[in-house]
Image (cartoon, rainbow, N blue to C red; front, side):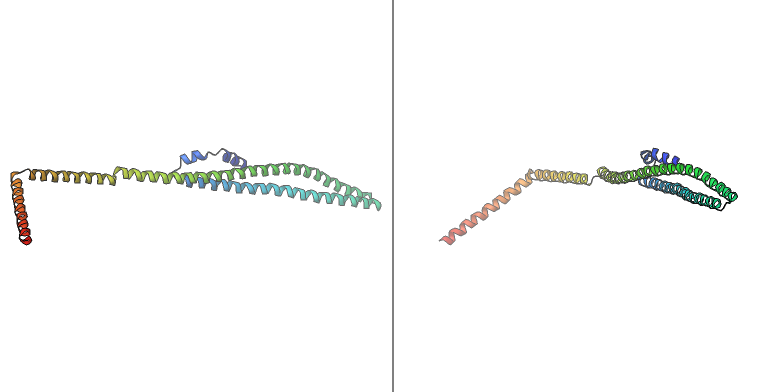
Length: 222
């Protein structure tokens, strides 16, 4: 797959679809970023190779220009020495360098356009990777928050199913029941004839004591 195809695939990538199919969204997002970062690294290598090719062509052009100039000077020197045969050979060599120059200049124009286009696409890819990282970080935070909230709700739900407070309510009901039973037992006891006779005896004893106390006070008063 070419680097341009990978760029298109990355641009069309749907992170939400990736999350919906993943058991661990955070892990899947990290893998996605790793893959995108690796694509960016490979793209950088290709961009550098195109730029290196452009520089190589420029160097060849400089070499050809120097060679053409050198052959031209040699042709001049040959003519000065009345060596037309050598002058012709020098001019032939100059023309070959000039022809090479024409081709190299055309290659340089094409390489420069391709290199500029690759740099522009690299910047686009770099921007998309940066945006993907920001979105990954945001989704990771949201996923962690949602996970924590779900755990809390699950914990609350489990407590609701077996609420300890409901046990207190049941215990309170039992205590109230026993209190009611105790009151009922006391009421039944105090309403019996035996209890009433006992109370009469206690009242009589209490009255006798009161009489004895009054008598004692009277004696001491005399």
